Structure formats: structure tokens, C-alpha cells
Length: 366
Image 1 (cartoon, rainbow, N blue to C red):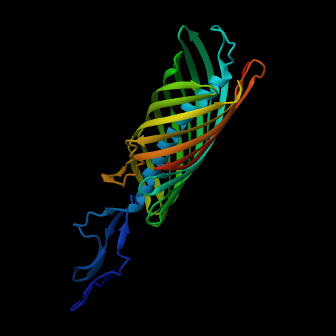
Image 2: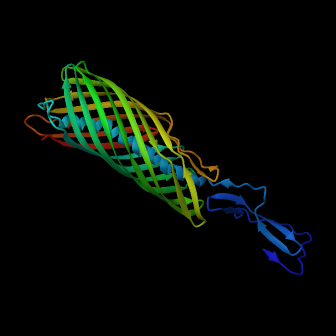
Image 3: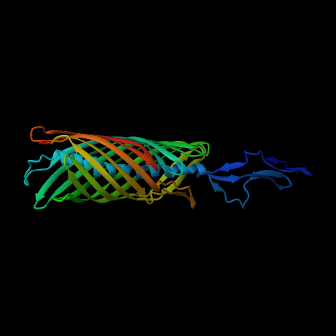
């Protein structure tokens, strides 16, 4: 700050910095408190004390919130598979098919507007598709369903911290998988599915009062299993079920760019363990048309997202906890006389995940 080769007269001088302007931030968003001191008889300097280890800026929580959004996007894809995609595939399979029949195509398109409570919150708007083929094989006492499929989804998100910091980004996933289900003659059924693919995305936001950006890429794998019982009563059917979902998002290392410089952040892998209990009531108006309503309860056991920089760990967002939902839908089945099927559904959510998802299915039998 000051230098004089002939020496500085500093008798009675005190040193300090202006309050609020005494923080130095590194490329990795580590904040240090700077001080003014006399170095020698000729020099007064601004420096960081050796004992000051620094602290990670709390705004860095928006970095793992990007990943928290990713794992929740994959969880929504699992919901699409186990509900709309299966029903669409079953509708596409005409009752008159024989064991020798080939696979029948189906397609599902849906969207969502959701908020995830992560300790702060993340808003998400996006769409998802599931396209595949189905074959149903009847046996004595049960029917087996085989569904190979492709899945794709994209979403825009906004993450908001309590201190006003915010991040925005876009993400998409592409993957494939297989679902298998067995329906017994007495209404009992059980199913399982395996999915794998890749998630890509970007981030733009403000961290420590500076514009920051980065890109991410990571593989994912997911599995699910469920059991249920369908009970018929006149024109009505009641479907009681329980399901378990596991989703894994792989780790990644990304370079965060800002005016402070470039910093390499390590993004830990994320595991989601989720259960669901639910019931769906269906009123069949005739052999083709039906209205249905259902409710359910989800519980997330983990999904914590972590990011680190040179041993510093950001705050860890998670949606661990309960979410409940209420669904309403209408469908028109494929029959021998009508090869087209339609299924429309709206689901409202409350809890750790709240908002709405909506799906439209159009099926065609060949």
C-alpha cells in the first residue's frame, strides 16, 4: 500500500480496512479476511494472515443444487415408466393378440412444473418422453409383459438460496431400459425395471457476487421393483401397490468459470432410495372408456448432493422426506374395432416435492 525507500514515520498509526470491504475471494470462492500491517520500516502492506484458513462462500450451495435437480429429473422418469408408459403399453396391446404376435409400439409424452424443497428450493419446468415396444405373453394363471424402451427428457431449473443467490440451467437425459411385469389371474402383480443412460447440463448464476458458469456430464443407472393387487367390484377396480425406486447419478469434475478465475470442483455421486405406497380407483364406463383417481405417499431416504473444492465441502441440498400426490385421469382403450388409445393424467404434489406433472399418451395397435 505504501513504500518509501527512506522509511515511513508511523508513530501512533493504527491500521484497518473499511468494514464490508475486507474480504478477498479466490477462484474457488474461498473467502479470506485481509488486514493492513507494517511489513518493515519502509513498507505498509495489505495481506492475508497466515492463521486465516478462509471459509467457503455459502453461495456455492447452488453448485450441488444443479445435481440435486438432475437426480430428481431421473426420479420423475421412473414415475413416467412405472405409470404412464406401462399403461400406454398395455393399452396398445390389443386383446386379440396371440403368443406369436410381434412387439407393439407405444409412446408417452409428459411435462412437469415442480418445486423441490432442498433446504432452500429449486424450481423445475420440463418435459419427458418414453418410447418403446411391448409384448404380452399369456400363460396358464398369469400374463407376462416385456417392455424394452428408450427415454429422453429435458428441463430448465432455477435454484434459489435463502440469502438471495440464484442459479439457472438446462439439463437433459437420454437412456434406455427394460421393464418386466407378471399379472396373475387373481389380480396380484409384480414388476421390475432397469434403466441406464447419460445426463448433461449447464449452469449460469451468481456466486459470491460474481457471474459463474460450468457444464456437467455424468452417467446414470436406476432400478425399481413393485408389487400390487387389483381388485374388481362391478364397474370399478381398485389397485393397491407398493414400490421401491433406486437411482444413481455418477460423479463428475467440472471447471467453474468466474471473474475470480477457474476452479475445478468435484461433484460426488448421488444415490436416491425412494418408496411409494398408493391406491388407484378406476370407474369403467364401458369396455373402452374409463376415469381414474388415485393418491399416494412417497418417502425419499437420501438424495444428498455434495460438491468439494480442494477439501472444502459446500452445503449439501437434499429432498429427504415425504411427498404426497393426488392424480386424476381419463383413458380410452384400444379395442378390436378401434386401434387408437388415449390416456390423459394430471397429478398434483405436496411436500418435499410440490407442483404438478401432466401426461398425454397416444397409442396405436398394428
